[in-house]
Length: 220
Image 1 (cartoon, rainbow, N blue to C red):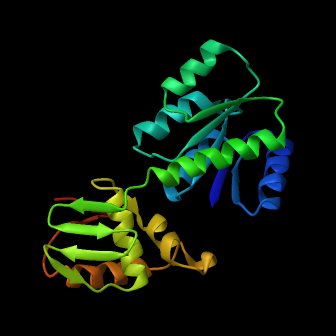
Image 2 (cartoon, one colour; image 1 turned 45 degrees about the vertical axis):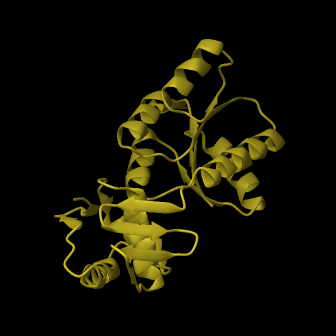
């Protein structure tokens, strides 16, 4: 599970990283509004831990932007303000949970497990887009009533498109999904090769659109 920590206080961010890594979570840290925004647009996360006060911006405003970008990743808001009006404000803006500082690592981990569990339970196993259907339980893909044989990487890409219909996914995001050599992700064109093969297997059903200079999107 890949978790993004957005916290401008380096000491607090380091403590959070140590706690999460000790429980086998994969963690990345962003220490500013700008850095967090770039990371969220380039990567996919299972969960975001978002501090309200950031040095170059406001965590609440970043939360609003995350939801405006149609990023549905669960967000756990962290703040030192224990005010009911603030809680209502962030929950109404799209936060999935709210935790006041100081908090114990035990409570933090419990809330993280609950949010990740909720995300897993709400995931739909059968996804349909026009003539295409994908069963994430059996990993079976059908075009009309015909089963399409896909490689593991082709399936992973298509599943990502099906889960994010009409949303532009960057080449970096898609490369990260299928490339294990993280040092070469940014320069890799492997995703373009897989997209080309995927399009062939869809037999002219033109739904994977190229967004020039950005990436791809699944669109009618």
